[in-house]
Image (tube, rainbow, N blue to C red; front, side, top):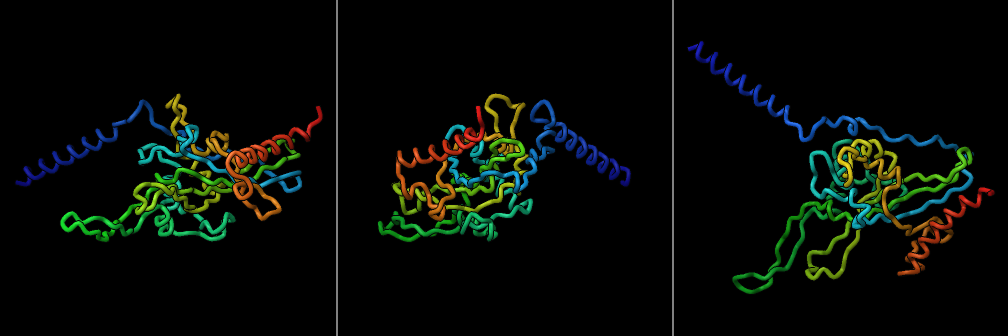
Amino acid sequence: MKKLAFIVITLILVATASKNSVAQDVLDGVYVKEHVPARTPVPYYHLREADVMWSKKIWRILDLREKLNHPLYYPTKDMDDRKSLMSLLLYGFEKQNLILYDDVDDEFTTPTTMEIVNQRLGAGTETKMQEDLNTGEMIEIVINNERKPEDVKKYLMKETWFFDKQRAMLDVRIIGLCPLRLYYKVEDVDEEELQTSKIFWVYFPSIRPLLANHEVFNATNDAERRTFDDIFFKRMFSSYIFQETNVYDNRLINQYALGLDAILESEKIKEDIFRLEHDLWEY
């Protein structure tokens, strides 16, 4: 009897080991990806206050619906090797103690909580009027919603442009990011009024290690997957300026210019920065 039990246990252990061996040998590709998980952010050049001859804060909008920005939006559902930028920020907040700040201002003064973030992403309960199929009367029903990170289709970006006389060049540092959720209210069945809400602000230098360890899709070469940090460091995104520091308490461009005039004003600010660098040189 003991011999039989020993044989049964041995067979079970062998089967389990064989099963684990098969699972470990499965590789979705031809090599193990080791480079990106071990990446570190490209270090910034050391900057002294005395080296900065000129600087200006700029606020931009990144619209993820633009084709160049698609790598920041997709996939809308997490994959084994890729996440969207919004999913990555939530992952960092939940798993890696990343600090997110309330949208009360863009100075990173008030940390926020996951409960508040989930609510701003649409999680919670909502009431909706619906026709009762039996009586024909309108009744109130309660809907339980999950958070929708895929609703984040824009980002605010705060950055500082400066001229470094030590290196004799114009440079830029991203200071913070703020996801913007675009959605329609439950009662807006015809989807006539698109709502926009800020979710949180995140201090960009604090998330660079996280961004450097996660890859984004490269449409032309699967073996050359860039990271989120590469996208921002190399400025491989599309955006437009909507605010700059000014004497009017940082008012937005759309507060004094609309439509085409707002676009032209945005381009004027960008052109002024470009010309400033060239005006410092003598040819």
